[in-house]
Image (cartoon, rainbow, N blue to C red; front, side, top):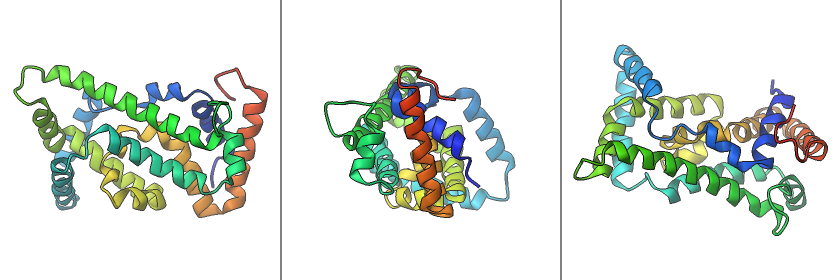
Length: 227
């Protein structure tokens, strides 16, 4: 059963202060995390064939230039579009009014999506420094992603999304965006949780979440953190 209070609190923090997603983004380079995934992948022989199939799909996606700002932005926007599908335009305007008041609130999801994509790219730019001595840093990064711990992280995060929120996974899988999900998963998790609650438990539960969000935004418009 969905934790309505917890989902609403996490949604509030991001909607009211989009820049808070900065601390929720691992980006490409997270050495301890990726070493852990790499070691886990070495010893996990039961799913090796399935992961090799995923690696082939990843290689093809990389060749098709999936690793860029536009694709990351579009992947996040797909999730927000599904989230907004549960809301009327008036409800969207009311929910996102704290992001900006100069335009329709529903358009503000572009601001949040852009913020997430921007920070992912900034973290990626840090990774470029590691490979600044290479002739082609993009090739070096792609190779690292394909064969290293990040490949394991990408594949397993995609698998977890498929298990936890299959309706969101299917939306991203169509364009291989599920392979990018590990880059920004934590930043969009409350939106994914709300979507899954609406999908699995019905619109009334989703409406409860949104009601709680609006209550928190009305009560704590300047607090920054919602309890």
